[in-house]
Every structure is written in structure tokens, then in C-alpha cells.
Amino acid sequence: MLGYATIGVNDMARAEAFYNELLAEIGGSQLFGQDRIKFYGTGEGAMLAICIPYDEQAQHRGNGNMIAIPGGDRAGVDKLYAKAIELGATDEGEPGERMPVFYGAYVRDLDGNKLCFYEMKM
Image 1: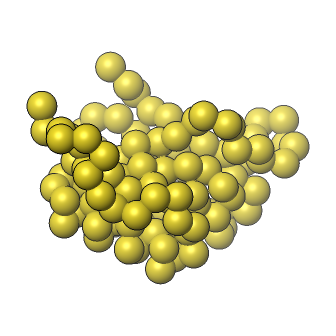
Image 2 (image 1 turned 60 degrees about the vertical axis):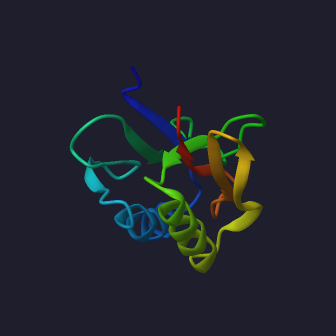
């Protein structure tokens, strides 16, 4: 249902380094892009794009916007959270059970975009 989600960044080289390492943890890589936008994925399913805003104005994080990235299992969630923090992300909620079917962790990337790493069992 979701093709891709895009988040704005202010410094493409810095953001690219962050997402190259972070998404490699779950088998993701940069699939294609141009100077101002880069698309990440596994080759199947939805993608995440990072971009310099089209209007070339400063990136502003959206209040209430968040990108959720599946961690696979609880250990995967913990690993993504730790990697993001190691890469300079800021904590927005350590890994933990949020409800009986949801285990998640929250960070803000280098530009303040909110990311969630999760495992959901239905």
C-alpha cells in the first residue's frame, strides 16, 4: 500500500552517511537517486527517501510525522536503536513493550526526523 516515504534533510552527505549505515543493519541500501534525493530499500516493498526540500529552503521536521522501520524481532529493534544512537541520533524512547503486541524504540535522526523501530505481533 505504501510506495515510499520522504523525509527532508539539510546536509545530504551527513544524512546519506547516517542512513547508509543504519539501514544496512536490516539489509537496506541506497537503490537510486540524484543529487537532492536518495531512495533506500531492499528491492522489495516500500522505500524510504531522504531529500533536500524541493523549494531549497531549510528542512523542518513535521510535528506528528514519523517513519516506522520494522526491526524484524525485539533483538533487531534493539540493534537498530543502538546503531542510530551510535550514529548520532537522539533518544525519543528506549526499546520496550508499548502494548502486548508492540515492541518499539524511538529516535530522532540528525535532522530531527522521528524514527520508530518496531516489532508487531498480531
